Image (cartoon, rainbow, N blue to C red):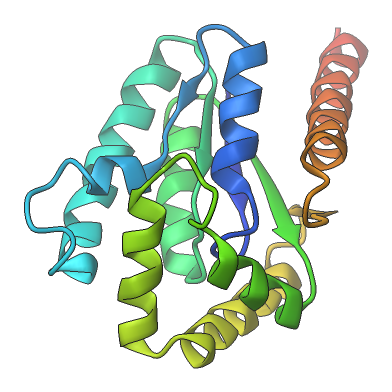
Length: 196
């Protein structure tokens, strides 16, 4: 059974980095980075919200196609609205895939600091552009509100697994995410064996 792996978490927590590592270790898995899709849409720098509304349906279609072929998808994307998570989960259900939710979390203060420093040494130059856009839209206040939305998501999405993300400990965090996915895969295999 294919898996739709949603890596959720505050902006700048390391979702994209972990997704790149995961697909590097798992050939055939689609790294569905919606921010990369957004970056392909003209005018995204000036119309950040609008292009997000364009990019999400494209991402839903990409996920549906890949999962329908029996291949896994990993999506590193902040989603703080339950209705948005439900849309992606519905694609997994419709294609017969498992929907696996992992929330990467740090404290609110450290999460905001990590976002603010992102782009200084990041290989993705557009991270600096996104940081500038967030600063213009409210900066730390906006990021704090986004973090609070995620805390509510954690309360509501009881199947989501929270993985602590420590700044600078990329390998450690990646191994924790991989362990969650290995455990989930083993539980599904055990359940399938037990049903025979």
